[in-house]
Amino acid sequence: MTKNRITSLIVVILAIVLTMGIVTQSFAATRPVVTSSNGIVATAHPLASQAGLQILIQGGNAVDATVAAAAVLGVVELDFSSVAAGGVMMIYDVDAEDIRVINANAPNPAAATVDVLTRETAQRGYIAGMVPAAFKAWDEALKASGTMTLSQVLAPAIEYAEKGFPITKRLSDAIASNASLLSIYPTSAAVFLPNGMVPEPGDMLVQTDLAKTMRSVAEEGIDVFYKGEIADEMARFWEENGALLTKEDLENYDVEWGVPLHSTYRGYDVYTPGGEFCGALVLEQLNIVEEYDLTAMESTDLWHLMAEATKLAGADRDRYIADPNFVDIPEQALVSKAYATEQRDRIDMANAMDQVGSGNADMYENTTHISVVDGNGNMVAYTTSTGSSFGTGVIVGNTGVFLNNGGGWMEFVDGHVNMLEPHKRPMNNIAPVIVIRDGKPVLNIGSPGGDAIWQTMFQLVVHILDFDMDVQTAIEAPRYRTYNFGGNDLRLESRVSEDIINALAERGHNIRMFSDWTMSVGGAQGVVIDFDKGVLMGGADPRRDGYVVGW
Image (cartoon, rainbow, N blue to C red; front, side, top):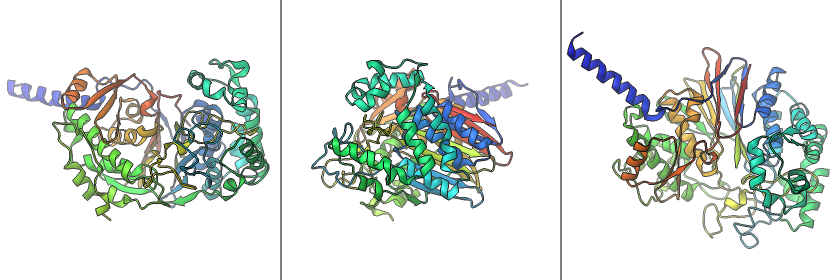
């Protein structure tokens, strides 16, 4: 071999190594990808994943398994999940080849106004709380697209609530972190602080009242929760404790069905919820970076570009995203290629933007996630949340139920698009993603994480579609999160190399570091689908108690 050919070969090898190192440098996954062909369930807790798989094995479909898994999460991961939580569910029907969306974002009660609530009182305590939404969403999904009854799919959750389950270290730590809050309310302290003590990992947690509530719904139907005896108990408790919620709020609540937002990215069709959810921001970020060859970029350029795209999207969130029943959202403009071009032109690759305002889109026309794919190819991407850890902090009477406290994330400034108003649903960072290629599903993924959700979703899609990472490696790769939308704060997980950190700081990013495996950047679950081979590949986030099972 000649000297020139050797030199050329070395250059090619170095180029490949450097390209691989852009995102994956020493980022090998700590867990293997879970592969299966008959069905797969990825959730934030092993017991929930196993409950969903149990339903699939019994002949249920993706919707049946999702509801079963969600119900179990409401028992075993109840600081983030609840039968009364808010959320959004995307259902892909393989036969119809379409995606439908259930908007179950919990709304404010009729009496909620800025005159009676503050940001603080809207978050915690008796006066806080949104209308319970999750139970209604589960019932609607099953009736529309499921094959099993609510009684069948609630059975695993009822058993874990009635007989108990061993507490994980993560949940024990969560109870400890919120002990001062939970101790204020007798109904909460009785369950989570027995004898005034924080349960240790491995202790059994029994939730008798929650089991009774779920069993009543399983046996009598959803109306018992929204109109019957359980509704009466909640209304009694609210009235006795000066809450704003009433039985009328329960009776009048219903979910909304719709269709997802859509855009394309490098030949893929990407779908995500619109409206007051932040799916538009995921699509906006993807559109901004689409004109770049990300795999050929030097590492610092890549991190810088993606962070700047996220900052631009964040500014748009605060200007535009809110309940579409109350405001007009220019969401088709936000996800357009033309708007992305204007946003892209604002990025200086040598310098971080110090002050970031929203674009002019008007000129154009503590959460958990479940990903399920069944053996026929039906899919569900469901992200649901209690808001803060343990929601309002108050178990409602003898129901065993925590309420979502999303009203605390609304604005108390007159005229703001996300201003708190009666019946209004808050802006919600939730943004699960389903990706289709040539009419066939290839990806079903989502994440919790508050403001980090739509930022993490952008990074995950780039990792998988641009860098061809397997789903587990994509989930485990270190992430960034921007703060102070409008400014240039950038926080990184500590596995990011020191060279990249220093280079980003030199470009003007205000760098702060997270510890490794922080939940502050989310806790994703996802499934990659090879439709032609009939193979499902699942990943779950070690930043939480995430777990994938398949068969």
